[in-house]
Image (cartoon, rainbow, N blue to C red; front, side):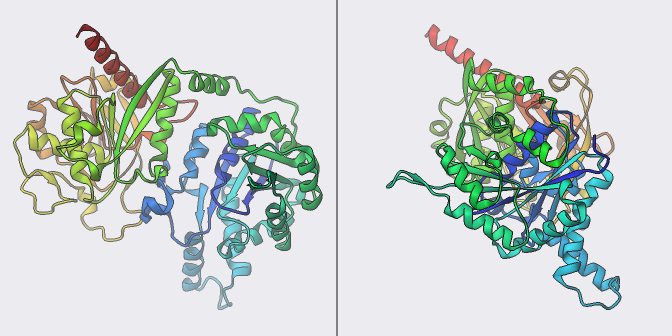
Length: 546
C-alpha cells in the first residue's frame, strides 16, 4: 500500500452530463474491491457556496452527508458505489474557494499583496484537495471536476491540476478525460473530432490526459480507438469505451472487462495482480435484472419533471427492489395535479405511495389529498421529511377534527400549528447551511414495528429540515391511533410516526434514502416494498374470490 495517496483527476469534454460521477464511482468501487482505501471528491465550478439554496430544477437533488454538509448529488453516487460515507471535505465549490480567500484578504493574511487567481485561488483549491490526503488515510483519491473543459469557470481547476501534477510527481497522479463520441445517423458514422478538440484544449491548458473514456451509443471499433489514441497522445489500450447501458450499476463491470482498473493501477505504479472481489456486486445485478416480482409505487412530489430531484429515493427503491427480487416501477405524480376528484384515477392500481420531501407551499394540497386516499384505502404509505409532516396535517384535519390544521411554513396564522418551526430555527435569517442537518440520534419505541424493521432500539439518520411535529398535540394523535414510535433522545423531537391498524403507514422526519447503498439497502425501504408486495398479493386474492 502507498504511504502518500495517489490522485486520479477526472475531467469532461464536449458536453456536460456524460456521467463523470458514475465513471468516478465505478472506478472507485473497482479499486476498493481490490483492497485499496479510496474516496472521491467533487469540485463544482459554480459560485454558490453549496447547493443547499438551489432549486432542485437547477441542480437536481441536494445530498446531505453525515457531518451535515449540503452537497452535490454525485456524492450520493460515491457513497452508494463505495458503501462508505463522505464528508464536507468531499465537495468543494468555487463559492467556498472564493469565500475563504476573500475572508483571508479581509483579515490581512496576504500582507497587502494583490490577490489573484494564481497563486491565491489555485493554492486554496490545492489545499482543499490535499485535506483528504492528510486526514482520511486513503491510498487513492479520485477528484471529479464538474463542468467541461473550455468552460471559463472551470479554468482555475484545470490550472490547479496542472500545478498539482508537477508538484506531486507525474507517477503519483493521472488524468482521465471523459468525452462524447457522437453518432451521425444519416451517414452511419461515429465522429471523433469533438473528442480530439476537447483533448487538445486540455493540452493547451498544460494537462495531458492518460486515459480517454468515450461515452457512446455504439461500439467503438479498433480503427476508431487507434485514431483517438494517435490524436490524443496515448496508448490504444487507454481508450476506454463507455457504452450506454440499461443501468448505471453495470458500468463498473463493463469497465472492468476492458481492464480499466488494472491499467489505472499500472499507470499509478500500484500493484494490480489482485483481482477485485465482485461477487456481491454481481449478485445484486443478477437480482436486479432477473426479478421474481413487480410492484408499482406512486411517487407524489413537486419536482417530478426532473427525476434527479429525487435521485436518492429512486436508487434506494432499486436497492430494496433487488434485495426483495422485485422490479419497482415508479409512477411519477406531480402533486399540483392531484385533486379530490381525480386522486382515485391518479393512484389507481398502485401498491404503495411515497410522499416526497420538499419545501414551500406550492402543490401541497395534492400531497395531503394523496395521504388521505392512501390512509383510507389502506394503501402502504411512506412519508419522507415533508411527507411525514403532510401525513400529520392530513390526520389532524380529517381524524382529529382540526379543520384548519397546518404547518406554520404554509400558514403562519393557522389556529392549529401541528407542524411548527423548531425552537433553534426561530432566530435564523440566512437560508444557506442553517437547517437541522446531518446525522442525529433516534430512539425507537420498544416492541414497535420500527424496532423490528431496524433490528435495533437506537439508530442514527440524516436530516435536512427546519420544521417539526408540534408535541403539544401528541397525546391527541396517539389517542386516535397515530403513534410517535421514534424520538430524539435529547430534544424529544418526533422522528417517526406510525398509524395503527394499517398495513404500512409510516412517516419519518429524516431522509433514510441517503443511507441506502448497493451493499446495504435501507431497511425501511425494504419494509415498504415488502408491505406493497403483500398489499398487491391481498388485492389479487380478493379479486380471485370475486
